[in-house]
Length: 137
Image 1 (cartoon, rainbow, N blue to C red):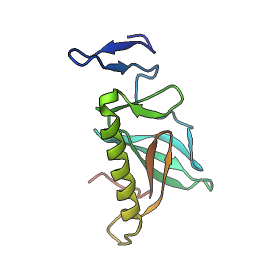
Image 2: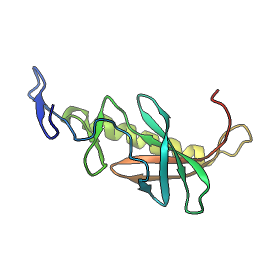
Image 3: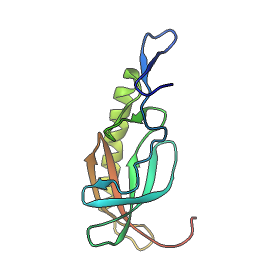
Image 4: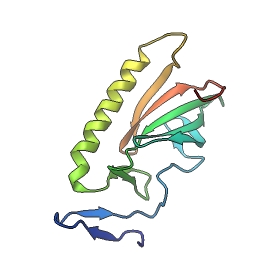
């Protein structure tokens, strides 16, 4: 579908927005709260994980709340509910993600990657963690 077009959901009368971006990832080079996105590391149904650098050039990992079944990214890079019926579910998940980031930032353990920052931007929330070079578990 062309960007900006809408489709009516059968039986609901609701609309789903189709955005210009085909993918949900932030573009490389995007600035977030003093960090610069370098590339996507991975993701799943509820988040996208990026390799980024801080203002000093140190590598960090940023996890973005981006539930692919509930939200889309618009042309301004904001994350918005893809349908009015998903607005509250998206907002509830965003609140829980932010609370989780706050809780994890208070835990200091040698076997757990440190959460060093968390913030709101672009209509969603982000969790910044230390970058640990190695293999996926």
